[in-house]
Image (cartoon, rainbow, N blue to C red; front, side, top):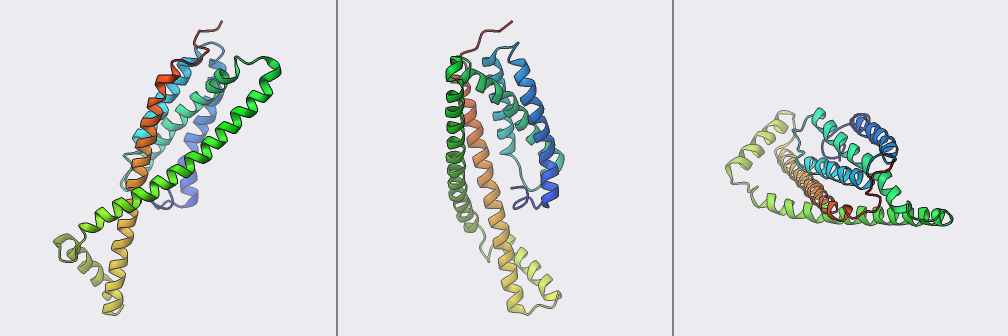
Length: 219
C-alpha cells in the first residue's frame, strides 16, 4: 500500500511502519504483565476499541496525508493490537486444565492462521471489486470534452510535445497518465473502504468481548 499507492521507497515504507511495530511489541509485553493485575476482559475491550479507531482513522488516508500522520495511524493500530493479543490468548487458554494446554494452544494457532488466510483472501477480493467499481465511476466523469479533463490532457500533451514526442505519441501518453491516475485513486478508495469495513467489524466484536471469561480482577 505505502509503496504502490503512496509512492514510498521500500526503505521509507519500512521506516514509516517501524514505530507502530515497536509499540506493538512493547504493548504486547505490557499487556502480558497487566493480565496478572487487571481484568482480561477490560484489556481485550480496550484493545479492540483502539484497534478499531486506528483502522477507522486509516480509512481517511489519501495522497496528501503526511508521513507523520501515517506514523500516528499505524501506531494507534499497533497499540490496539498489542493490548489485545496476549489477554485474548490468556482468556482462550486460561480455563483449560494443564494436560490440555498444549492441545488448546495448537487449536488456537490453527484457528488464528486459518482466520488470517481467509481474511486476507476476502480483503483482496473486496479491494479488487471496489477498485473496479470506483474506476468505472471515475471514468464516467473523465470525458475528453469536459473542461477539467480536456484542460489536463491538453497541458500534459503539450508537455510531452515540448519533450520532443510526436503528436500521436504525446496524446497516447497523456491518456495513459490519466488512466494511471484514475487507477491509483480507485485503488486508494478501495483500501479506504476496506479499512472502514474492518474497523467497524472489529468494533462490533466489542459486544461479545464483554462476555469473555477472566473478567474478574486477579490479585
